[in-house]
Length: 131
Image (cartoon, rainbow, N blue to C red; front, side, top):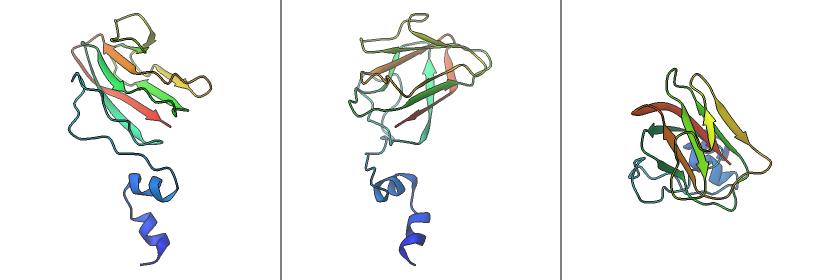
């Protein structure tokens, strides 16, 4: 197997490392809603986020963050995104409407922690891309 085949058959995180964008993978031990700070996700990959009616931190502070996209694909529940501080409060921050509301930050991207809270008990239909 040559180098091109090894690159094609590698997991996404390994592809980023081989492309020169090394980043630790998101730990499977972290569950949204825990009080610990979540690990930083691999850059450039799409991640599902499970948003609940309790505030949870989805990203730690990261001074190297250059791109953030969060989209709410749930047909019913709204999501509020807030930056910095200690917790999200429903309706205070960026509101992502049900049915595809989203936010794309690629110029002035906050490097602070990112929190989310939802208007329904469990919303598994939110996605995030970080770079």
